[in-house]
Image (cartoon, rainbow, N blue to C red):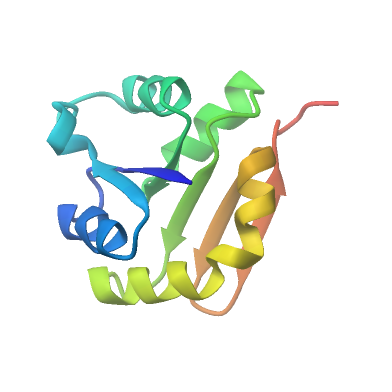
Length: 123
């Protein structure tokens, strides 16, 4: 699985994921640090990446576009450290991989994980 880490998260998250043998890149590393969410969304779709973000605008984009890809993982937790996010992601990635591959938005909260298959509002 390939990940595109949004500017709302530290580049250290992408580095930590690479150290765990995942393909991951931060938007800043590919010149998209100042890009709009729409441009990041398109880049992730073209490169078949799952977007990792704290920015809920990606969920809005998915709903408006009614598309199945790219999948998005949103972290809506009180603790926002890179280490806490990495721990939560790696502890639950296997359980959501099939859904992410099929097209999904996964929202990680403090006490639960919400998952919705894409497209949102689709058939």
